[in-house]
Length: 408
Image 1 (cartoon, one colour):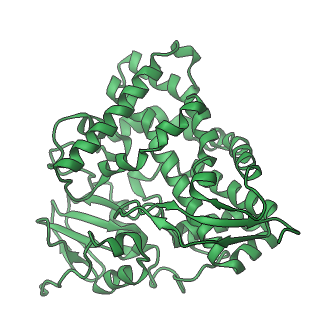
Image 2 (tube, rainbow, N blue to C red):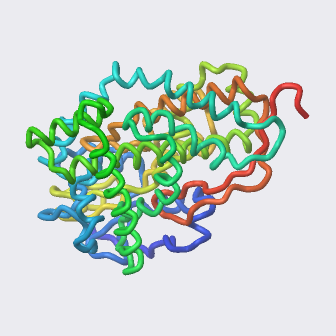
Image 3 (cartoon, helix red, strand yellow):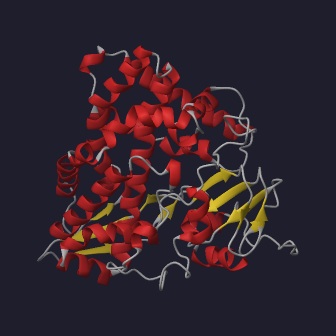
């Protein structure tokens, strides 16, 4: 199908877009359909739910260009080494090899064991929230809730939590779908080196049998020759990287939603059993991870008839897809009973569906239950501030007041 090339409607580097409400921008993208990305050859931006769902389900798609193990712009160094051993960013057959090593620890029976830990972590964090006084919900709540689960999973000291998470957002540039400049690459290498060095020292700090089951599994796989040392370091850091960022961002987003949509909080307080369905709806409505990418190894025709060729680089606008009118009724409203909220693309799909998604869901569910049982109202003091990032526009500050019954 031959069509004229549309003008790309959004400046992805515009600070107002990066830190603001993207609802209208994403609506324009969906309306225009599949759009060539003007800054990179053979690259298209896809934003409709049907197309993203079908692309991520293709077992033949790649997360790196054919014949490579890292983006062409990424120079040799710590970041490239880390990415080439990262479960999220490797292709077959290495992806299945890595997933098969760690997969047994993510079966439902094992994941369910984390619910009690998550509930304790939520209760501990909420107990510290003062009645009727302003707090920063990001730094005084959302940052702390994943601490218990991740520290338990890895066996890392909770005293190390602050230095492990304070610059985590810088590391996320490793997933950038567009090339970083020289300074950006230097910063990425520096923060990656910090994490590799930290986990190298941590792994050597005790005998294998004294590590957590997850870390012990990795070290035993290394001893058998099934994993390289870099893969062990990468898979250890991935638990911190993915587990912390997704959960922290989601909880921050949810507090913002509850503060700005009081009727939603009232419904949740009246019926805490809505926590599970609310988790899916909040992940759909305010997606933590906005962008992923794929490379096609077979032609793909989009819903608007655009033929994407073999080798095409496809930028997948997950957050835009989760507000698609063709997939969700009244997508810009919150419906805690939405029957198909779980069809969101917050955790991707196909071979690279997020392995830790069940643990993230547990933490969000327990947070919602905790908020509903501890507080009657959440009020926004000032608008939240977001990190100016295309992929992870996480809240960096969210001043709110949480009020318990009888507190005015």
